[in-house]
Length: 78
Image 1: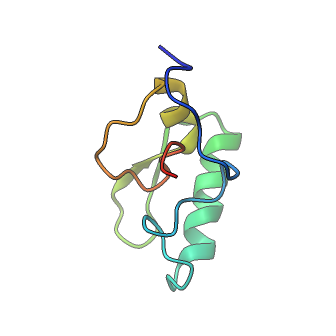
Image 2 (image 1 turned 90 degrees about the vertical axis):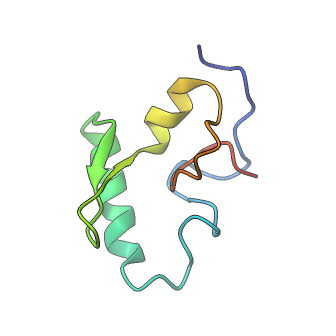
């Protein structure tokens, strides 16, 4: 079910600013956890600030469409 919806024009490591603010105090740590999960082939990672599981952009892109649940790493949000 991939390829239904076009991906946003930004890299997979760059969440939309409305989902992860550029001035978020733990932004670098969050992005490092996201990158490590993608490199390990994991669909999720534990958010360093909350402990909640967050889906990676790679996992979400593989779904093929946006679920409109405001996922942090949604690759479809423009």
